[in-house]
Image (cartoon, rainbow, N blue to C red; front, side, top):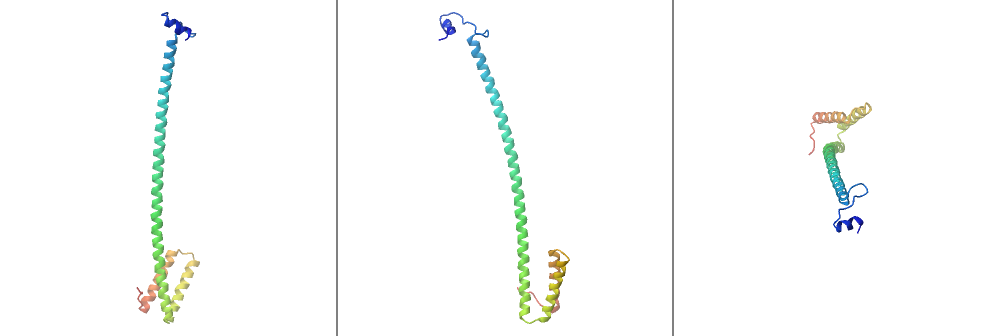
Length: 154
């Protein structure tokens, strides 16, 4: 027991501490400071929590946007793949048809096909787009079909 506690237990008033207050006043001051620190800590915690929530919200929006962009790109790539696949399939059917005509000895048609191939080469040299070249070749082949009254095999 300290000297102040001993005098308080004997019924005497407590002695003032070195700063001019009693031990009781010092305890109250410390308790008040602890409460102030707790309130400050709670306020900082709330602020940090709000900042974290805001950051998470921004990140979620970015992720959502990136996901949408990825989905759009996936859809576009899928469409382009389908178009390319269809074009390849159509081209292979045309090659099969031309090969069929070659096997059956239609030399006049074969010379026309060589002409179409030369047109394609001319377009490649002049750097025309593949789409334009494909359209021109298709027109030439359709013209040959109508000229020789040939239908496309199914």
